[in-house]
Image 1 (cartoon, rainbow, N blue to C red):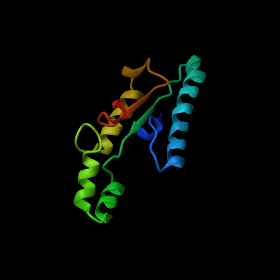
Image 2: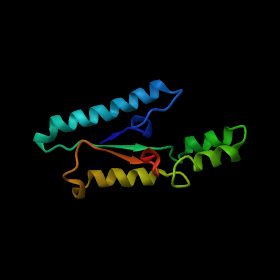
Image 3: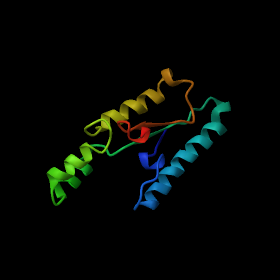
Length: 117
């Protein structure tokens, strides 16, 4: 199980090193899935958008206009609000479960529809 980002699925300006590494996670996920499938090993990834973590909360508090920053982040994705860590954990739990036994080589966005645009 790997963790990429929405930046690993679409290009984002002004952060090429981060975007580059997240695209790399997508590539290695797909390559490893192909290589290890014969051994029954599944390899997938999740690609979250901005998640409401303590780090993001601190970023909002430290912004020049915290209310505006929170509003911007909460309206970044088509679904309003921000996912919480438990939303990402639920996607990971599904991919690790027997219910996903025939899923390999995929990246599941946890992004409120952001990459569907």
